[in-house]
Image 1 (spheres, rainbow, N blue to C red):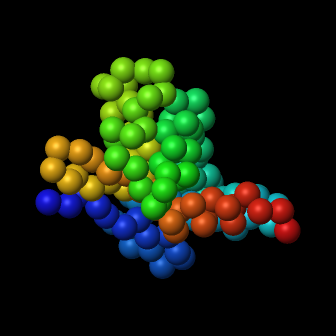
Image 2: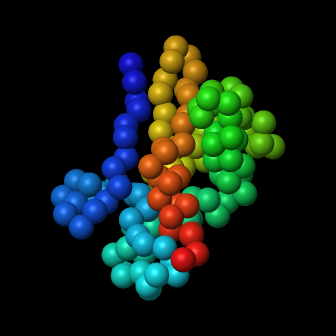
Length: 125
């Protein structure tokens, strides 16, 4: 049973269902100011990464060999297992991670398109 889902980048013709997906959507910050809608869609991603535990978990997944990490390999961040699960859930809700259950373990992966879009958003041009 797979819980993995691909999060599309939102484009100008995104339908109503896609608008609920939180994903980077915008040109580089140095290109022009965000519209109110772009800021609303992008802010949850930065909010999720604003917590030090979440940032450590995101980094652990992103830098893990093979591009994915079992929750059993990234749980040592100084908080309890239920708290780790809470933070991983928040990262998933923000569209930064996807997950897949394999037996009793859950494996997390950074969504490559989201990582690329984040890099583009923060690029100086």
